Length: 445
Image (cartoon, rainbow, N blue to C red; front, side, top):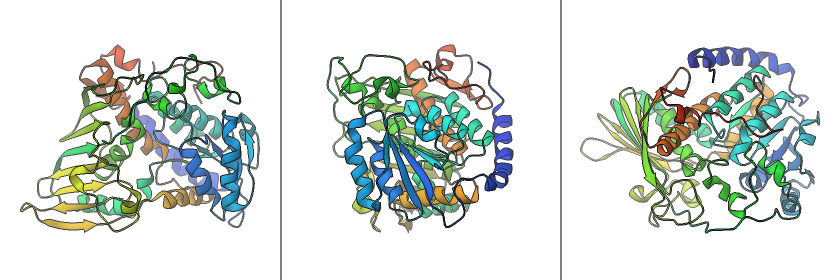
């Protein structure tokens, strides 16, 4: 594999982005501030079922298409859009029909992970801006291709790291920058809750109405299995990347962002399938140690602990804090002066001084609405969005580093300039895959 120097790659990307924010102001399809931004939702089973109505309820957005290989979803999802805005979207199985429509300004990419990168690159090539769900990609090389495409085609690419648009997160970043915590040397990131078993299923035939070959896209061709299909695909290496990428990536992103971290020097992981006995390939128990300059970050995940909870919506939307010891979607920042508890998606944060007394309490809300608003604003202004693809790539890569260390069973050392592993062919083989014809990632894009 040949990789551009990371500093050169991201530096060039940053300069190009600045130029793109000006040049692209004249290329947006939406005709002025009073025209609606026309969007298509690609992938409507999971996150797309939520994002479709969220975009549709905006007065400045028109949801023109729903695209999914599973046509069985169309009646219900279409009705959900109609119920919100009164306008019925067109439903198509093949998303390429959407890319060919010059009226479409943006694609909301809510597919399984293995489609995120190629779908984003194809959308950029077609002149569409993209809101792509987390994790950004299936592997590290794909993430770099997404950045390359966004900059080359002057496209806004917003990653669904909603916390990037939350004011309480920015306030935490400012608090840490102020020196109030002192020097930060340790961060503990948790992603623990009950996921449940997927059982064991035999291979079968795709249901009528499902274009399974299209659903697989760039992933390896394997027989249809319900356990490798809707949502459960997260637990298989050739489709997803386990819960560290599915859910834990949110906490990793905020922790990396507000403490100013970029790429770790080394990574080591342990864990396994300690609880479940089913078809899952990814671990139900996963611990990852990341070594940054002067900072150690530890990621801890158990998917079988009933007392560990995701922050419920009633806490996310109110000025209420989680019960910190049993908050499964929190992280902790250890400074030489103070300690911080931080909850994602509106969980707020608290700091404690050396006497163990609360020194500051900050509430916050779940910023999904603000994150979508930022995306729409950037479509019009051509500015970089809060969750720009370059930042999303760095955070998603933490999940991929952790998975590579777990799968090899070794401590891996990372070349931050090329985003590859030093002297480890087995780990480097996980950085890129060729994809399946005709769904191969173009190189260059």
